[in-house]
Image (tube, rainbow, N blue to C red; front, side, top):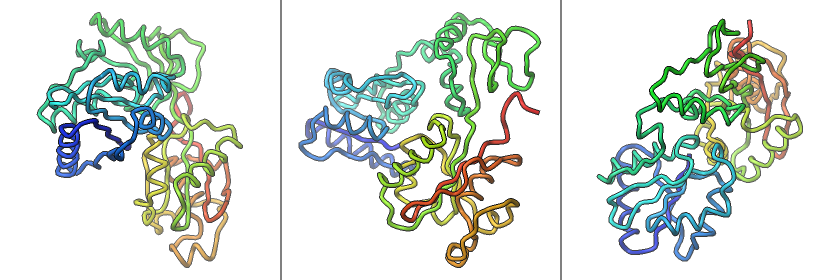
Length: 322
């Protein structure tokens, strides 16, 4: 996930530069610093739209007032972190679990030699966190009210049971990982169902690519939350527009060598031009199906627009299936 920093004093600028140097030394992508004169409100609005992690160096009150108009959903809001003007404390104030603000804060604190101030109950009690589990395993939370039930049980040091392999479970469990169920449960987690395959010419703009991908998903009634990963050919691994899309929607970017894509069996729309240029006649369909797993199936064939192609495959590793 992209990170953005805003500061309001010379001391804040020094801290921002120190943090970015530490990021680079540890092989972590630095945060983008807001330009001089950027208001906290503009910083927050743009960051939420771009789904970035927002780092404020200054008072918590500035951050709270700036982000408050844009806060909508604990599972999708941008992570927000505050660093005080002496770099003594690093405080995640929004999306600590679902979008990883607590982990970002912990990394920042370690790099700056600061104290991470974590307030979420499951963290301070070293208890199992259902939403962190879902995020790390790339699962959708189907009934968010169940998070509180499971977390409360974990905080009280009670056993939390999860059914993954055994479906349907023989006994009542706290968490079920399945496509759907009418069994008793506190929390239902569902696997993300689709992989995106992308092919594109050089020079496509991030906004253009995002608009095209979202239109293809919308036309086929596929939610972005149900996308597991983005796939393409290896020479596009560092394409700025593709990296920006994957980062904005917190999606893994999976790349394949042309020879591996070429070995895929199936009825794909081939292009002689792409074959001569890249070494394989179709990128989007082949990469989507390959990223979907052994039994992945193409559900949206190649859609092309202005030098960009998108295809969608359904994943094979669905729970509750034979």
